[in-house]
Length: 64
Image (cartoon, rainbow, N blue to C red; front, side, top):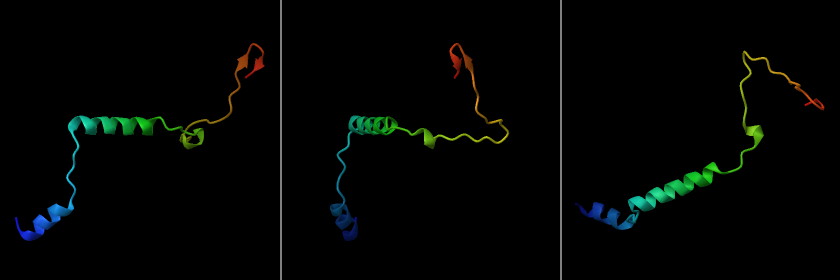
């Protein structure tokens, strides 16, 4: 190794991740992201080629 490579290695921090630690952190982060609330406004469906309209369903006490 030349002097420049040795100097750069001294600047970089060494990682202390273990395989189980990395896996647990990844799983915890994925879970935290997946349980965030989702607004119904963010969910959209393309209506090209579909008949999109309000539907009324008859029920015992009237129309729902």
